[in-house]
Length: 315
Image (cartoon, rainbow, N blue to C red; front, side):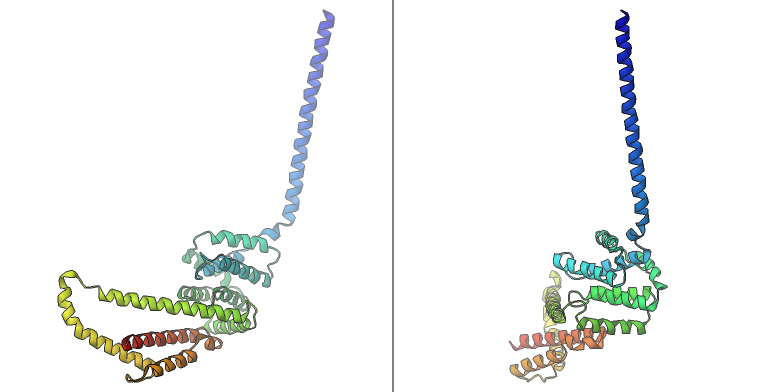
């Protein structure tokens, strides 16, 4: 009987020691894990400056994304999206942000998924208002390089450029220098092959003309069917004479745009159209600034519309 109790006591002691050892090992393992975590946090804190992004960089990223989103076909063309991202990355690298470029591009990807509010962007541009003029100049040049990546600016991109220019306190004189410097760099091939850029510009211009022609035809079509049913007959009688005078006036204006008289031959009309389009091609005005390019684009559009109207009436 005594031996039985001795055996039980020995088993009890053995189990007690085993449990103690298990808990002791677990405690040591927990302590080691905490020590390792502490060491990792310590080393990460030493390099934390590499992972931070300043408020200035955040504002720049948001502005770049806003400009990229206004680029035609941005939401449909994956290659264009990659080109825009690459251009933004290059802009930050050229401005000495190589240490935290990965964090900056993560911020770019994050902002690209969000809706950018113009009022919020304008408020944040105050972070750049106190920067030196050379910083503002390079920032605006980089912004132009993003805007022109598909060949040309559209109206919304021009509005955003004006808002940013005013938001960072840039003078018109400095902005004029920014424009000149941008085109100098563009022609030197800094952002892309200039011949490739001219090809993109020509494609954009062709799409622009076709779009305007579609809008013109749509407006013309709508104007023909905007009469109500109960007054259609009455208006038709009165509209014949007015339509004739309106068309005559527009036709006369079309001839004046081409610099021709109404008795000009078809060959003369075609020849004059080619000469005028060659004279007012937007690529010839890039060195004179954005306004000159815009004026040339509008003039070319007027020439095309005048030619279309004359040929329509001839036929």
